[in-house]
Image 1 (cartoon, rainbow, N blue to C red):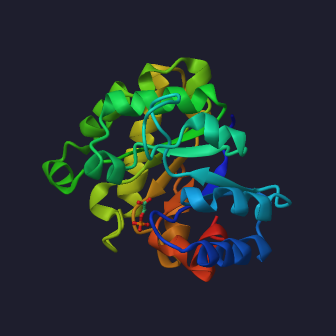
Image 2: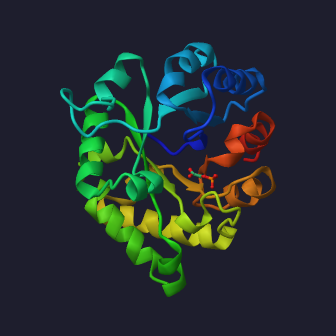
Length: 251
Ligand code: PGA
């Protein structure tokens, strides 16, 4: 996959079925720039209906927010990558800090999810990022390197090429506090350099690295204009059609 400009919305656990369809409809009916891939990471209940609704829009895609690290079987409440594949879901979030923090997803679990998703031709949107105390200690790059070493750097080159990466400093998620464009660029460049070392400069150059953490219409443009920031993973501001559409138009 070559580097793409991506605006991804992460609805998290928000929107009833009808409200979600209205939001997706407003986005798909807006004038979307042809050069930006728009991804809607919606709750499971919305996936098929939103996919059917947005099918004609070439640059609008759905994503699951999660999949099981197991293939199938007695795992009550879980949804497998194979099930997602059966309704043509092209992306899945893996490693979001809320999953790591509230659901105890460690590197082993994340590696299982990566494996399941990739085996079903679903591209993982792999999330990484440091908590506030690590940022304050100035060890944020080493912290993110450890996250990458334990998970996506174990993939083969072929599989790694399927990834989208999202850098999401935990202190900026849902807090209204955004990383400055300098802080975002510093980490994105560091991640790209780590990828170049682990795989190759060509692979590093071709992977899309998104910034996430309180992206809003007022800061999207300056973040997206950084040379190593290829777009955003947007939570709160993706729940309002007008805000998200403005963000899509910020490249
Ligand atoms: P936020 O969430 O935009 O509400 O900070 C981003 C995310 O968690 O993906």
